[in-house]
Image: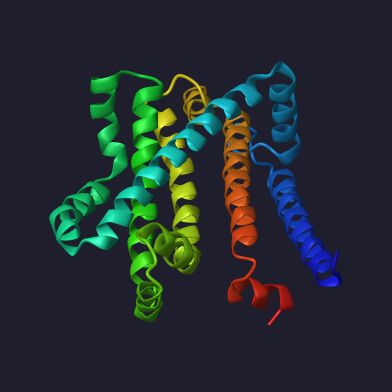
Length: 261
């Protein structure tokens, strides 16, 4: 491991430790009531208790399953439709205004309608997550494919390349940085969509824990659920970053980052 990486990790740890210490001293010295803001020790005990009885892992598993499933479905649908929109200006002109209208509609306002159609549970939650992840991938796919310089297409036509060869040899590699940026945004949106759906209509998951803790005025449970939600979101974002670093090892942005320029 490089010395710079060790220094970065040390600074990150130091910042986290300073935040926890500041939280502890604020609660202790300020004599803040525990029902308003419990200290980090109380929240840690709550987390340990929930891990031991299995409730935290259960709800994290439910939320993670919703995130992954909705993200994958939304990303695939967004990529496929984005590919066809990028190829056809006519199709884009016909469909894009309606796609923008759906995206502009706050997703939380659709949940009551989904509940009426599909009931409480997985179906309504999954639909919201799919819609949340769909548009970022769609938009970045269109932008990515249309950002490929025309000279590459002309060269592939001279070489009598097929449409499949053009897709795999030109379009995908050159638009991959923009596509990965879309996947990052889609993952963040999928996490938010899952938590909101569980908050409004779920019977399990971290969003449900947030609602339950709020109704019980249990600040320890609320903070523990918030911490677990943040952990899940960071974990899935980190996975996308790993995939990006492996797929774009050749790209100048990664080379510059590695060289520290």
